[in-house]
Image (cartoon, rainbow, N blue to C red):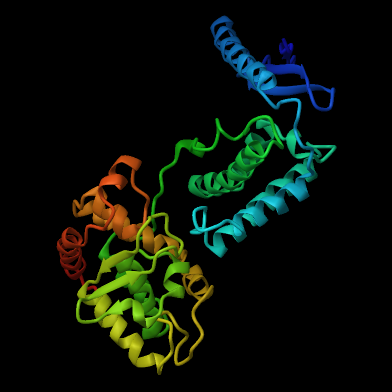
Length: 374
Protein backbone atom coordinates (compact mmCIF):
# COMPACT_ATOMS: atom_id res chain seq x y z
CA UNK A 1 0.00 0.00 0.00
CA UNK A 2 1.25 3.45 -0.87
CA UNK A 3 1.97 5.39 2.27
CA UNK A 4 0.29 8.79 2.74
CA UNK A 5 1.03 10.54 6.03
CA UNK A 6 -0.34 13.70 7.64
CA UNK A 7 2.22 16.25 8.76
CA UNK A 8 1.35 19.10 11.14
CA UNK A 9 3.28 22.35 11.10
CA UNK A 10 2.56 24.99 13.73
CA UNK A 11 3.07 28.68 13.16
CA UNK A 12 4.55 30.13 16.33
CA UNK A 13 3.62 33.66 15.28
CA UNK A 14 -0.19 33.42 15.27
CA UNK A 15 -0.71 29.91 16.62
CA UNK A 16 -2.26 28.49 13.42
CA UNK A 17 -1.58 25.00 12.17
CA UNK A 18 -1.05 23.79 8.59
CA UNK A 19 -1.77 20.17 7.70
CA UNK A 20 0.11 18.58 4.82
CA UNK A 21 -0.10 15.25 3.03
CA UNK A 22 3.30 13.64 2.47
CA UNK A 23 3.70 10.83 -0.03
CA UNK A 24 5.95 9.59 -2.82
CA UNK A 25 4.91 10.26 -6.41
CA UNK A 26 4.77 6.86 -8.16
CA UNK A 27 5.92 8.34 -11.45
CA UNK A 28 8.87 10.52 -10.49
CA UNK A 29 9.72 8.72 -7.21
CA UNK A 30 9.98 12.10 -5.56
CA UNK A 31 8.71 12.98 -2.09
CA UNK A 32 5.74 15.34 -2.40
CA UNK A 33 4.11 17.61 0.16
CA UNK A 34 0.59 18.98 -0.40
CA UNK A 35 -1.17 21.51 1.83
CA UNK A 36 -4.72 20.39 2.57
CA UNK A 37 -5.89 22.52 5.51
CA UNK A 38 -4.85 25.59 7.47
CA UNK A 39 -6.56 26.40 10.76
CA UNK A 40 -7.37 29.79 12.15
CA UNK A 41 -4.99 31.50 14.61
CA UNK A 42 -4.90 30.00 18.11
CA UNK A 43 -6.72 26.85 17.08
CA UNK A 44 -8.41 24.95 19.88
CA UNK A 45 -8.94 21.24 20.48
CA UNK A 46 -12.25 21.08 18.60
CA UNK A 47 -10.82 22.92 15.62
CA UNK A 48 -7.88 20.54 15.45
CA UNK A 49 -10.14 17.50 15.68
CA UNK A 50 -12.23 18.80 12.78
CA UNK A 51 -9.09 19.63 10.76
CA UNK A 52 -7.62 16.17 11.36
CA UNK A 53 -10.87 14.55 10.24
CA UNK A 54 -10.74 16.48 6.97
CA UNK A 55 -7.07 15.63 6.51
CA UNK A 56 -7.73 11.91 7.11
CA UNK A 57 -10.49 11.88 4.48
CA UNK A 58 -8.21 13.59 1.97
CA UNK A 59 -5.40 11.19 2.79
CA UNK A 60 -7.68 8.22 2.09
CA UNK A 61 -8.73 9.80 -1.20
CA UNK A 62 -5.11 10.44 -2.16
CA UNK A 63 -4.26 6.83 -1.31
CA UNK A 64 -7.03 5.60 -3.61
CA UNK A 65 -5.71 7.84 -6.39
CA UNK A 66 -2.23 6.42 -6.05
CA UNK A 67 -3.55 2.86 -6.05
CA UNK A 68 -5.82 3.40 -9.06
CA UNK A 69 -5.17 1.57 -12.30
CA UNK A 70 -2.77 3.44 -14.51
CA UNK A 71 -1.41 5.60 -11.71
CA UNK A 72 2.09 4.37 -12.43
CA UNK A 73 1.69 4.45 -16.22
CA UNK A 74 1.12 8.15 -16.80
CA UNK A 75 2.28 9.68 -20.04
CA UNK A 76 4.52 12.59 -19.15
CA UNK A 77 3.64 15.77 -20.98
CA UNK A 78 4.72 19.36 -20.38
CA UNK A 79 2.33 22.12 -19.39
CA UNK A 80 2.62 24.05 -22.65
CA UNK A 81 2.38 20.89 -24.76
CA UNK A 82 -0.59 19.69 -22.73
CA UNK A 83 -2.41 22.98 -23.26
CA UNK A 84 -1.78 22.94 -27.02
CA UNK A 85 -2.84 19.29 -27.32
CA UNK A 86 -6.07 20.00 -25.44
CA UNK A 87 -7.00 23.00 -27.61
CA UNK A 88 -6.29 20.97 -30.75
CA UNK A 89 -8.48 18.19 -29.39
CA UNK A 90 -11.34 20.65 -28.82
CA UNK A 91 -11.21 21.87 -32.42
CA UNK A 92 -10.83 18.50 -34.16
CA UNK A 93 -13.75 16.47 -32.78
CA UNK A 94 -16.25 14.78 -35.05
CA UNK A 95 -20.00 15.47 -35.38
CA UNK A 96 -20.85 13.36 -32.32
CA UNK A 97 -18.37 15.14 -30.07
CA UNK A 98 -18.21 18.74 -28.89
CA UNK A 99 -18.93 20.31 -32.23
CA UNK A 100 -20.99 23.04 -30.54
CA UNK A 101 -17.94 24.53 -28.86
CA UNK A 102 -17.66 27.92 -30.51
CA UNK A 103 -14.39 29.47 -31.62
CA UNK A 104 -14.69 32.18 -29.00
CA UNK A 105 -15.07 29.49 -26.30
CA UNK A 106 -11.83 27.83 -27.37
CA UNK A 107 -10.03 31.18 -27.33
CA UNK A 108 -11.40 31.90 -23.84
CA UNK A 109 -10.17 28.51 -22.65
CA UNK A 110 -6.75 29.21 -24.10
CA UNK A 111 -6.60 32.60 -22.38
CA UNK A 112 -7.66 31.21 -19.00
CA UNK A 113 -5.28 28.24 -19.09
CA UNK A 114 -2.42 30.52 -20.16
CA UNK A 115 -3.21 32.85 -17.26
CA UNK A 116 -3.10 29.92 -14.85
CA UNK A 117 0.23 28.70 -16.22
CA UNK A 118 1.61 32.23 -16.06
CA UNK A 119 0.72 32.46 -12.38
CA UNK A 120 2.38 29.09 -11.73
CA UNK A 121 5.53 30.26 -13.46
CA UNK A 122 5.52 33.58 -11.56
CA UNK A 123 5.27 31.81 -8.20
CA UNK A 124 7.53 28.93 -9.31
CA UNK A 125 5.02 26.39 -8.02
CA UNK A 126 5.76 23.75 -10.65
CA UNK A 127 9.51 23.54 -11.08
CA UNK A 128 9.70 20.72 -13.60
CA UNK A 129 6.77 21.98 -15.66
CA UNK A 130 4.98 18.65 -16.09
CA UNK A 131 1.21 18.43 -16.23
CA UNK A 132 0.89 15.64 -13.63
CA UNK A 133 2.51 17.85 -10.96
CA UNK A 134 -0.40 20.31 -10.73
CA UNK A 135 -1.95 20.07 -7.27
CA UNK A 136 -5.23 21.20 -5.82
CA UNK A 137 -3.43 23.87 -3.82
CA UNK A 138 -2.09 25.43 -7.02
CA UNK A 139 -5.59 25.95 -8.41
CA UNK A 140 -6.95 27.10 -5.05
CA UNK A 141 -4.24 29.74 -4.65
CA UNK A 142 -4.79 30.94 -8.20
CA UNK A 143 -8.52 31.22 -7.55
CA UNK A 144 -7.92 33.19 -4.35
CA UNK A 145 -5.48 35.43 -6.20
CA UNK A 146 -8.12 36.17 -8.86
CA UNK A 147 -10.72 36.92 -6.19
CA UNK A 148 -8.26 39.26 -4.48
CA UNK A 149 -8.04 41.31 -7.67
CA UNK A 150 -11.73 42.18 -7.37
CA UNK A 151 -13.11 39.83 -10.02
CA UNK A 152 -16.67 38.63 -9.56
CA UNK A 153 -17.46 35.12 -8.38
CA UNK A 154 -18.87 34.14 -11.77
CA UNK A 155 -15.76 35.31 -13.61
CA UNK A 156 -13.44 33.47 -11.24
CA UNK A 157 -15.45 30.25 -11.43
CA UNK A 158 -15.57 30.44 -15.23
CA UNK A 159 -11.78 30.75 -15.35
CA UNK A 160 -11.38 27.83 -12.96
CA UNK A 161 -13.88 25.86 -15.07
CA UNK A 162 -11.61 26.23 -18.12
CA UNK A 163 -8.67 24.85 -16.16
CA UNK A 164 -10.85 22.07 -14.75
CA UNK A 165 -11.96 21.00 -18.24
CA UNK A 166 -8.33 20.92 -19.35
CA UNK A 167 -7.29 18.79 -16.36
CA UNK A 168 -10.28 16.47 -16.86
CA UNK A 169 -9.01 15.91 -20.39
CA UNK A 170 -5.57 15.17 -18.95
CA UNK A 171 -7.10 12.63 -16.56
CA UNK A 172 -8.98 10.88 -19.38
CA UNK A 173 -5.85 10.72 -21.53
CA UNK A 174 -3.60 9.43 -18.74
CA UNK A 175 -1.53 12.58 -18.15
CA UNK A 176 -2.51 13.16 -14.47
CA UNK A 177 -3.75 10.95 -11.62
CA UNK A 178 -7.00 12.82 -10.98
CA UNK A 179 -8.58 16.19 -11.64
CA UNK A 180 -7.48 18.47 -8.77
CA UNK A 181 -10.21 21.04 -9.56
CA UNK A 182 -13.05 18.70 -8.74
CA UNK A 183 -13.52 19.98 -5.19
CA UNK A 184 -13.21 23.71 -5.84
CA UNK A 185 -14.78 24.21 -9.26
CA UNK A 186 -18.28 25.28 -8.27
CA UNK A 187 -17.49 26.88 -4.94
CA UNK A 188 -18.67 30.49 -5.07
CA UNK A 189 -15.85 32.82 -4.15
CA UNK A 190 -16.90 35.08 -1.28
CA UNK A 191 -20.43 33.59 -1.46
CA UNK A 192 -21.55 36.50 -3.62
CA UNK A 193 -24.54 36.57 -5.96
CA UNK A 194 -24.66 38.26 -9.35
CA UNK A 195 -25.97 41.82 -8.96
CA UNK A 196 -26.73 43.26 -12.41
CA UNK A 197 -26.35 47.07 -12.69
CA UNK A 198 -29.61 47.26 -14.68
CA UNK A 199 -32.66 45.92 -12.88
CA UNK A 200 -35.61 47.98 -14.14
CA UNK A 201 -37.02 49.66 -17.26
CA UNK A 202 -36.10 53.15 -16.04
CA UNK A 203 -32.43 52.19 -15.74
CA UNK A 204 -32.55 50.75 -19.25
CA UNK A 205 -33.97 54.01 -20.58
CA UNK A 206 -31.23 56.01 -18.86
CA UNK A 207 -28.63 53.71 -20.42
CA UNK A 208 -30.13 54.27 -23.87
CA UNK A 209 -30.09 58.03 -23.32
CA UNK A 210 -26.35 57.88 -22.67
CA UNK A 211 -25.75 56.46 -26.15
CA UNK A 212 -24.63 59.16 -28.62
CA UNK A 213 -26.93 58.05 -31.47
CA UNK A 214 -30.07 56.06 -32.16
CA UNK A 215 -28.18 53.16 -33.76
CA UNK A 216 -26.31 52.34 -30.57
CA UNK A 217 -29.45 52.77 -28.47
CA UNK A 218 -31.27 50.24 -30.68
CA UNK A 219 -28.47 47.70 -30.31
CA UNK A 220 -28.58 48.09 -26.52
CA UNK A 221 -32.37 47.69 -26.55
CA UNK A 222 -32.19 44.52 -28.65
CA UNK A 223 -29.65 42.91 -26.32
CA UNK A 224 -31.84 43.76 -23.33
CA UNK A 225 -35.06 42.47 -24.95
CA UNK A 226 -33.66 39.20 -26.29
CA UNK A 227 -31.00 38.16 -23.76
CA UNK A 228 -28.60 37.22 -26.54
CA UNK A 229 -24.92 36.84 -25.90
CA UNK A 230 -22.73 39.37 -27.64
CA UNK A 231 -21.16 36.72 -29.87
CA UNK A 232 -24.56 35.30 -30.83
CA UNK A 233 -25.95 38.71 -31.68
CA UNK A 234 -22.90 39.64 -33.75
CA UNK A 235 -23.16 36.54 -35.96
CA UNK A 236 -26.90 36.75 -36.70
CA UNK A 237 -28.01 37.71 -40.20
CA UNK A 238 -31.29 39.18 -41.40
CA UNK A 239 -32.44 35.70 -42.38
CA UNK A 240 -32.84 34.95 -38.66
CA UNK A 241 -35.60 37.57 -38.28
CA UNK A 242 -39.17 36.70 -39.26
CA UNK A 243 -40.85 40.09 -39.26
CA UNK A 244 -44.37 38.83 -39.82
CA UNK A 245 -44.17 36.54 -36.78
CA UNK A 246 -42.10 38.94 -34.61
CA UNK A 247 -39.68 36.10 -34.06
CA UNK A 248 -35.90 35.86 -33.86
CA UNK A 249 -34.34 32.47 -34.62
CA UNK A 250 -30.92 31.70 -33.15
CA UNK A 251 -29.27 28.99 -35.27
CA UNK A 252 -28.19 25.80 -33.56
CA UNK A 253 -24.66 25.59 -32.24
CA UNK A 254 -23.84 29.29 -31.90
CA UNK A 255 -22.56 29.78 -28.37
CA UNK A 256 -25.47 27.88 -26.90
CA UNK A 257 -25.61 24.86 -24.61
CA UNK A 258 -29.02 23.73 -25.87
CA UNK A 259 -29.37 20.86 -28.31
CA UNK A 260 -31.83 22.63 -30.60
CA UNK A 261 -32.23 26.02 -32.22
CA UNK A 262 -33.76 28.79 -30.13
CA UNK A 263 -36.74 30.90 -31.16
CA UNK A 264 -37.15 34.13 -29.23
CA UNK A 265 -40.43 36.07 -29.52
CA UNK A 266 -39.87 39.81 -29.86
CA UNK A 267 -41.46 42.65 -27.97
CA UNK A 268 -42.90 45.62 -29.83
CA UNK A 269 -39.90 47.71 -28.75
CA UNK A 270 -37.44 45.16 -30.17
CA UNK A 271 -39.40 44.87 -33.45
CA UNK A 272 -39.28 48.64 -33.97
CA UNK A 273 -35.56 48.68 -33.23
CA UNK A 274 -34.98 45.92 -35.81
CA UNK A 275 -36.89 47.88 -38.46
CA UNK A 276 -34.75 50.94 -37.84
CA UNK A 277 -31.56 48.89 -38.02
CA UNK A 278 -32.65 47.31 -41.30
CA UNK A 279 -33.30 50.74 -42.79
CA UNK A 280 -29.75 51.77 -41.84
CA UNK A 281 -28.08 48.55 -43.00
CA UNK A 282 -28.29 49.36 -46.75
CA UNK A 283 -28.46 45.68 -47.60
CA UNK A 284 -25.80 44.51 -45.16
CA UNK A 285 -26.04 40.82 -44.13
CA UNK A 286 -25.68 41.25 -40.35
CA UNK A 287 -28.38 42.46 -37.95
CA UNK A 288 -25.75 43.90 -35.64
CA UNK A 289 -23.86 45.48 -38.50
CA UNK A 290 -21.83 48.64 -38.40
CA UNK A 291 -23.83 51.75 -39.19
CA UNK A 292 -24.28 52.02 -42.97
CA UNK A 293 -21.76 49.24 -43.46
CA UNK A 294 -21.49 45.50 -44.03
CA UNK A 295 -19.11 44.59 -41.21
CA UNK A 296 -20.59 43.01 -38.09
CA UNK A 297 -20.08 44.44 -34.63
CA UNK A 298 -17.44 42.63 -32.57
CA UNK A 299 -16.08 44.44 -29.52
CA UNK A 300 -17.64 47.81 -30.30
CA UNK A 301 -20.62 47.20 -28.01
CA UNK A 302 -18.28 46.68 -25.06
CA UNK A 303 -16.54 49.98 -25.86
CA UNK A 304 -19.89 51.77 -26.03
CA UNK A 305 -21.02 50.50 -22.64
CA UNK A 306 -17.71 50.70 -20.76
CA UNK A 307 -18.00 54.45 -19.92
CA UNK A 308 -21.42 53.70 -18.40
CA UNK A 309 -20.05 50.97 -16.13
CA UNK A 310 -22.06 48.28 -17.94
CA UNK A 311 -20.99 45.18 -19.87
CA UNK A 312 -22.90 43.54 -22.76
CA UNK A 313 -23.55 40.48 -20.59
CA UNK A 314 -25.28 42.73 -18.03
CA UNK A 315 -28.05 43.23 -20.60
CA UNK A 316 -28.46 39.47 -20.75
CA UNK A 317 -28.63 39.40 -16.94
CA UNK A 318 -31.29 42.12 -17.11
CA UNK A 319 -33.39 39.98 -19.47
CA UNK A 320 -33.20 36.88 -17.27
CA UNK A 321 -33.81 38.86 -14.08
CA UNK A 322 -36.81 40.62 -15.64
CA UNK A 323 -38.38 37.31 -16.64
CA UNK A 324 -37.89 36.04 -13.10
CA UNK A 325 -39.45 39.25 -11.77
CA UNK A 326 -42.65 38.88 -13.81
CA UNK A 327 -42.92 35.22 -12.76
CA UNK A 328 -41.97 33.33 -15.93
CA UNK A 329 -41.37 29.58 -15.45
CA UNK A 330 -37.79 28.40 -15.26
CA UNK A 331 -38.25 26.16 -18.30
CA UNK A 332 -39.24 29.17 -20.43
CA UNK A 333 -36.31 31.22 -19.13
CA UNK A 334 -33.90 28.36 -19.92
CA UNK A 335 -35.20 28.06 -23.47
CA UNK A 336 -35.05 31.79 -24.19
CA UNK A 337 -31.62 32.28 -22.60
CA UNK A 338 -30.09 29.17 -24.18
CA UNK A 339 -29.32 27.45 -20.89
CA UNK A 340 -29.06 23.69 -20.91
CA UNK A 341 -31.83 22.20 -18.71
CA UNK A 342 -31.55 19.13 -16.55
CA UNK A 343 -30.97 15.80 -18.27
CA UNK A 344 -34.37 14.45 -17.31
CA UNK A 345 -36.35 17.46 -18.51
CA UNK A 346 -34.24 17.70 -21.66
CA UNK A 347 -35.27 14.16 -22.60
CA UNK A 348 -38.94 15.10 -22.47
CA UNK A 349 -38.69 18.59 -24.01
CA UNK A 350 -36.76 18.18 -27.28
CA UNK A 351 -38.25 21.43 -28.63
CA UNK A 352 -38.67 24.88 -27.20
CA UNK A 353 -41.67 26.33 -25.35
CA UNK A 354 -42.55 28.88 -28.03
CA UNK A 355 -46.30 28.99 -27.37
CA UNK A 356 -45.81 29.63 -23.66
CA UNK A 357 -42.89 31.97 -24.27
CA UNK A 358 -45.01 34.26 -26.48
CA UNK A 359 -47.38 34.95 -23.59
CA UNK A 360 -44.56 35.77 -21.19
CA UNK A 361 -42.79 37.99 -23.72
CA UNK A 362 -46.07 39.92 -24.06
CA UNK A 363 -46.08 40.40 -20.28
CA UNK A 364 -42.43 41.45 -20.47
CA UNK A 365 -43.30 44.06 -23.14
CA UNK A 366 -46.03 45.52 -20.93
CA UNK A 367 -43.57 45.62 -18.03
CA UNK A 368 -41.15 47.59 -20.19
CA UNK A 369 -43.86 49.91 -21.47
CA UNK A 370 -44.93 50.67 -17.92
CA UNK A 371 -42.17 53.29 -17.73
CA UNK A 372 -40.86 55.84 -20.17
CA UNK A 373 -39.11 53.10 -22.16
CA UNK A 374 -38.70 53.83 -25.81
